[in-house]
Length: 174
Image (cartoon, rainbow, N blue to C red):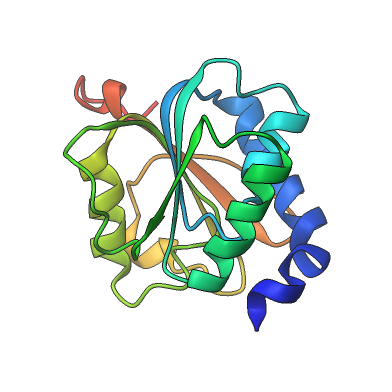
């Protein structure tokens, strides 16, 4: 089961991505963790005091095993008042149009079948900004995201893109 050893295998790698991306964009309001896995991002946000402005944190994942681990982490972090769990896939996000202030999607795009649909879903639900990362070895972003947003850097294994939705409506991607 992937969820059992996920944190031990990927914590350092994931935290490297979080740090780089969240130095460029902060989060506030309603946040969607698209592909939340075991909830490592929520732990990172709490440990770096970046949850102060967050009103609702939605953990979305297709894997019941990952969501169970995220639920345990939410309890351990004493964040049950802030977080909600949603079992769904990134290609069919069950949320209203522009209901999310910030979407954070770390290394999910490489795991979905229809990458363009997943990106369109992020755009549909997000009203301020979205962070999307793609593995360098897969780098599926090249094909479906030539103009997705601003490339903001890379870690040892990933490329990081940020799309500022409110600026896009004015003709710029930030």
